[in-house]
Image (cartoon, rainbow over the protein chains, first blue to last red):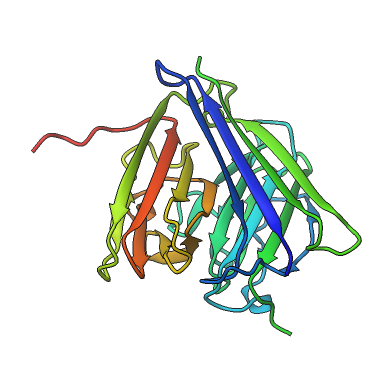
Length: 142
Length: 140
């Protein structure tokens, strides 16, 4: 059994008092005390245009499980971003499938059912953009 | 200008045998296409009963297609407890007892509402939403 730990912290001075949140979790299989044992490995992909691209295919993973997905926009330019969506071919500005936008340097870590593709689309056609991403899997299809 | 910084560290010594995993990332949250930080936030702690019902956790009441981030942590301690995390009608994943998540949120329209459904008992969630702006609902 593998042990994978994810620690999160956020600090902010938005409010008149300091905001500081710190949490740590051990990634576990669904309704189990056993840790996640499989992964896609950490991947890096270069995007040279704004074409929607499936970066995580649902058919590689067991459905309705407690997978987790980490994605980071490696770029440092805050004016460029990726749309991240939970359907194939759905990464556009205001489609209902869009989760959100990852600007340069932004990251996300979310639970994922493994039943729907994860799609991204870069906003720029002028600059090369890079994403790194990794699936922590609660079961993969053979 | 407010400064909000989100940091993650993911480590494992045995997920990839022979290749110790150590991911570290940090970002300062800004408004769409700007260097100006986010200026609005809400946070809370709720009990979500396992009643077979999806509940609205965060309503999309701001400017569409902006920069927003959502943090949710399932504070439950029973390993059988979990919530379905839903955006609109789509179940994204399961947030189990002790799990946290951090996502950008497009808040595009009513279909982008963040919803949760609890299973196996009343789950306790803590959440915080960092937003570009927020439209207060009109009083009834």
